[in-house]
Amino acid sequence: MTPITMTPTGQVYGTSHFRAKMNPEKVEELRRLRQQRGLPYRELGTLFGIDHKTARSIAIGLTWVSTGEAVYRADDAELDQVRALVARGVSMANIARALGVTDGSVKRLMRKQGIRSIHARSKPIA
Image (cartoon, rainbow, N blue to C red; front, side, top):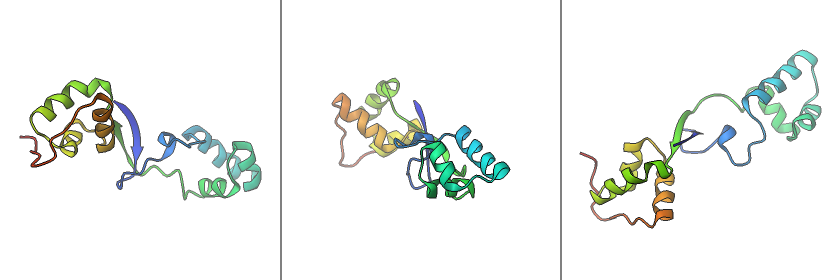
């Protein structure tokens, strides 16, 4: 399983996001530079390769606030478990819950491996 961070609504954020330019260490450095040296947001943005508005949002705590819980993506290590649960007629959503991974990652793994689920009357895990 690969750890990712998601909001309660399922949006990926932080270093898990595919467009992330910042990480927790850079965020702390940006905030330190702003607080100790009073660097302007434009200069901070240039230093870190981000827009000045993003630098401001990070500096004042609008973004990069630790709020979500780490969740996981299913990968090939869970393949046997996924196959067994599909054979029992368990839905993708229930498979994801049982494995503690995202629904989308189960769907991608199944699609990649050519595993077809039984959509009608999916059973919960007993």
